[in-house]
Length: 215
Ligand SMILES: C[S@@+](CC[C@H](N)C(=O)[O-])C[C@H]1O[C@@H](n2cnc3c(N)ncnc32)[C@H](O)[C@@H]1O
Ligand SMILES: Nc1nc2[nH]cc(C(=O)O)c2c(=O)[nH]1
Ligand code: SF4
Ligand SMILES: [Mg+2]
Image (cartoon, rainbow, N blue to C red; front, side, top):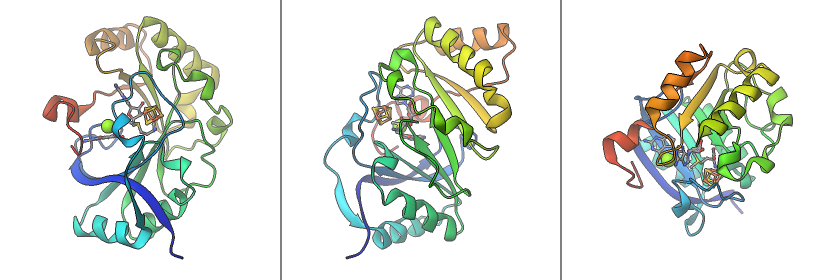
């Protein structure tokens, strides 16, 4: 039996987030997630999808001839075969990133992958799922993200930034406003006022294409 994964979509777009924002990227969106963040913009990936052999997914990715590949979901690490998928994407020569909720163990992910680890804020309603052991595993090739819903979430994120020295562990600390919950301008003003060592990230794809799936 060949390794398979349940996949919602594979598409080519501009990376809307993280340190490669703006660069053409293939997205592989895995189906299913054990969390239910109140703001989730990808709830259409909770169910459905198609079970596909790994080779078939790799072949579709190769057809786009990309430099960057982003594995997202849903929660990719909820499927054990996400680990061989990530390794084989690296072996194929792509620059690979993984978007993960931070609720599951990231230790088995190929070190060539840039792990984008969310620390779920209280405003997500899933902060109790954070696996803080992941923080010790972060390297300069990784990125930590806070999706911020309110001033209270911002203060919480700043306290975690300081408590764990996140800017010295990960290559990037990203502060992203929760779309529809928080004005990007307010978050920008707070980051400047506090002189934080973080990058404000806006979801570029929502400005370009609103909230359409597959973009
Ligand atoms: C849809 S999730 C999939 C990967 C993984 N489950 C996770 O949460 O990181 C991809 C990224 O989108 C972020 N996201 C989801 N909904 C959002 C929203 N309404 N505003 C800003 N970011 C959002 C998540 O926090 C996460 O960083
Ligand atoms: N363009 C684009 N960039 C993205 N970066 C992360 C995404 C995600 O849903 O994880 C995403 C997405 O859905 N679209
Ligand atoms: S963990 Fe990611 S995919 Fe799951 S509900 Fe939260 S934002 Fe959505
Ligand atoms: Mg998205």
